[in-house]
Image 1 (cartoon, rainbow, N blue to C red):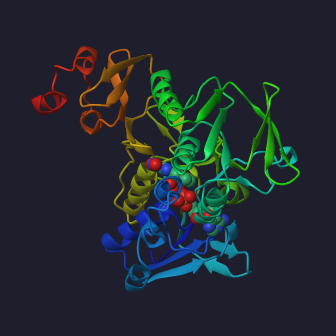
Image 2 (image 1 turned 45 degrees about the vertical axis):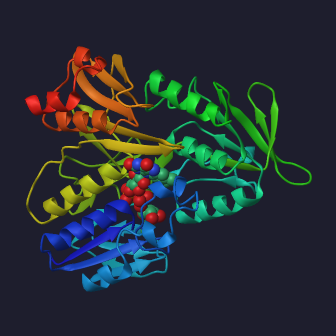
Length: 407
Ligand SMILES: Cc1cc2nc3c(=O)[nH]c(=O)nc-3n(C[C@H](O)[C@H](O)[C@H](O)COP(=O)(O)OP(=O)(O)OC[C@H]3O[C@@H](n4cnc5c(N)ncnc54)[C@H](O)[C@@H]3O)c2cc1C
């Protein structure tokens, strides 16, 4: 194989090309990205970078010299607009056609917008996906006094935390019955609701945002489902993402749940086209899943690199995730899908709490708040196909590290 073309220059693309070179691939690698930047990490955009505590250069996954040294041809600020599978060619927005032998889609996802007709495009309304979003929000937070966050998922909660730390008056409105409804147990939601309230954030749950309107003299009015109107300077929308799968769909590749369907080798329905990261979905343990995380972007891309070079290996996700809010580091190991019980372990050290998810007696996942031991132990237990009894999870007298070492 002589030429691998990659569309989408983000987290997965970076892991893929680094791995291809480290595995000794000596052919051509061409990376197409529609952002003007070298591949960078997104998590700090709603954390340290937004807080102004991380310089821009540190976001880069590899410095410019690495691409030169490793003979990676970069086409940045260029959008791929179509794929001609018969000709094995990618068309760019500027009209250039790029031939490939193998193609990898790492096009990521984009945030769901608050509907345009309800005020989603008004000045003062921000999204959180890329560097431009973070720069715009950061600048606006410097001059605004109050912020509404629409959506109580991790990105909304992190933006709320950074704004509250900067002294803005923050209100968070979640349409579902509670924050983190889609991703975490009520116990974890309770923890983060209390945390935010203790930092002065007003949290409304089971409350929709009906529309946004520009206010005379600046700022926005948010009309809420409970009939109230909230006047704010800024709005951040964090209501989930759409996988960027249109390019694949228009090329006739199989799409499922809005994402590019890949098999356990990261291959799409075309044997010459692979995909990795947020744009994909795959079957794992009998369920079709989408994993929106750095872990998946990295590991799936590394797996694709092996498979492209003929070292066929099925991808076995070992999900992990983190979120930083105020002085709390949340670390999640495993996937809680299908849980029927949650066991709480409080206070392994001051201020720490861990929620262990079970289906029957089988350990599925943990949400560990300031509890790296619980996180690390569960991660390693799951990786080795082991469980942990509920009694041991709940009992502070049980040393979790000793359970792990007991084998
Ligand atoms: C603010 C924020 C905070 C996050 N925090 C965490 C966290 O704490 N922990 C965690 O695990 N995950 C976190 N994530 C998620 C994580 O960043 C993503 O899962 C990861 O970036 C996915 O990598 P990817 O390569 O699939 O997509 P991306 O990194 O999004 O890269 C895709 C790239 O493809 C480009 N592209 C799309 N279509 C085209 C096209 N047609 N032509 C050219 N280029 C194209 C996109 O513009 C983008 O640059 C966070 C995400 C955000 C936005």
